[in-house]
Length: 283
Image (cartoon, helix red, strand yellow):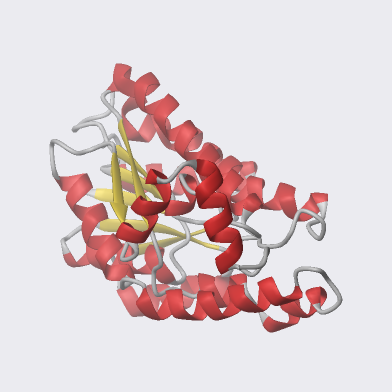
């Protein structure tokens, strides 16, 4: 039986990927952060889901999880590692604390580094293992190529993730381990509710950005409604793992044309267009 490790499987894209791979006959080792989620997802997805309880920011716990996987797959190689666990920290540069900014980096970038490094041998860096080398899929975002107001921390993490992915893709050619980025636009997942909670927005009631943040909340609600289902991302992840030839990056974006147009404009023109839409400057 082929096996794969997926991080952040309690909800959203990670859960959808776990379900899809299990349907196709894979054993899924999925990371969750607590026993309750481990029990719930195991009951829902069945015996071919094996929970790994760790937070990606905990390097020691990530390394310990490798032993659980190794005990079950023996001398076989993993078919893949999907680095999906992530979060979004939103706020103006004036309002973000250094701790918030660092936490965004720790989860979305350093967490991916921890998992890639820990699982390299099982993916094929250990040439004594049997089977074809596995693939690494890093779940990025369109925010990894387009910077938006109030998302500087999130943009930083996804821009960083994409640079990291490109660097190690070339580095890991030695072992035949491919690295592919999937960059979704809006997806119907809980991340939108987590990003823009109303109690967070209240921090800006007396700020110059009060109107802009209110606009962002309305836009976030609309983006969630327009987003693709998480199962669409899962289908792409499955095709990447099973296909011999892949592109290095897949963009899955229901607002694709709008974002392409933004990238075609000169930066200063795009700056003003975005700022006007977000009520940062007047029409």
